[in-house]
Each structure stands twice: as C-alpha cells, then as structure tokens.
Image (cartoon, rainbow, N blue to C red; front, side):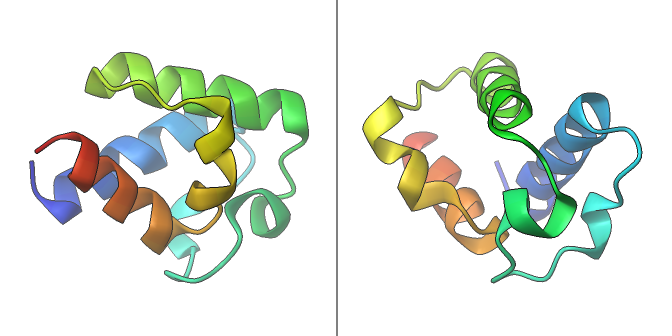
Length: 81
C-alpha cells in the first residue's frame, strides 16, 4: 500500500467521522484532532474505522504516536509491511 493510498483512506475516514472538516488540507505535521477540532470520542471512532478498513490493530498505548498525519501514515505503513 502506498502513501497516497493510505492518505486517501485516512481522509475518507475523517470525512465519515467529521463531515464538516477538510482533512485534505492537513499539513503533514498538523495535530489531526486539534486542527480538525475532533473530540476524543470521534478520534476513537476514527481509529477504529481505520483499523477495520486497513486490517490493522492500533493499541491504546500507540494513540500518542499517531497524532499527526505524517506519524499516522508512517505508523500504518509499518503495520502493513
């Protein structure tokens, strides 16, 4: 899976969870939750949705590692190897 493919999945998932946001405008180092003003419940729904779509499991202790778009993409790429 390529980086652009992962980003598209992330953006679609964010739009599903927070339809009034524009995730495609995120910069690589923006904090996703803060920039898109997503609350903790929606953030959890986002992670669960990504896990289901991508067939990965993100343990709670890793949530801090995926705060930015860059970190999330890298995390997923590592998990999908």
